[in-house]
Length: 427
Image (cartoon, rainbow, N blue to C red):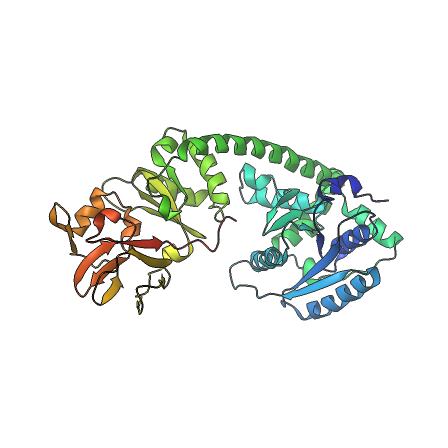
């Protein structure tokens, strides 16, 4: 008899639990086990419908019937899978994005991956040349959206799940695509693992145990990364930018392997990590000479180098800001793709407008006469990636003020720029 109580004890105080219910064997057994568990938080289920095959149209009905029998609330979410090189990856990303959106604050999402799934993941990533982080395979728990993802069956075999389902007379759906060996995981499951088990009957258990060892090794590497990043997370002089950045010279004191380890930890919170081939982008960014503007483009954002630091830019920071129209300077102004703006102090007289740099601008500076704006921005060490989106206040053709630089204002007024915030946030 399966007993999940010891594995779930840490999350008994969560406000609620949610089961990722596909309708297959694993999630069906998990839902049944949890439904019969005493003294648990409120329980509900969520079914993600990808719409990738006709057979899947019947699965929500099956899940609804099962939940009704167990007295459990079911949420059915339809998702669109992005077209890409890997249908499996696209479906997974759509599924987990839907999970993240659906989770309530503090809620625990429980999924049904088991020991063989863990072993297949390790072998699959090993064949792709993954490093320690990838070979640690699926973690037992991680943050997801506003809640937490927990996999309580990772040390349970599929055979044990089947035995439980038969003993409880449970029914489940079978995904026809699970038998298609054109998919890499199915090939491993149906062609490779049967041969491994003939020679090594405990292959899945051994591989899952290896994943645990690698997970422990990754934890140690993460601890080292935290220490290295703490030294590099110095003040950048532009708190109002609210951008994540690191001091480059501190990173360069580390060995190349420790640099990559620290950056992997830092970037994993912000983007999908690059594979080995793309780490040349970091070396190019790190070693660039002169006054260039080196940039390392990653899946969900870009790393820029400026002022002896590397800066993470994403979302609106990667777009070109739109031209704003300021009908009432006494009111805050939303800048298309560029945050918002507010004018404080004594309101300047005359028709006012907001614009961005085009080149050749100059500004009258108290006690210094007229100065070229480019030289002034160099003097204040404004990062290069900020300058093209730095709001400028004009009266007709006269430049009156530069946002967030009170030294560059021609009167008793200040232009306050609230920079764009990342909708993505930390992953």
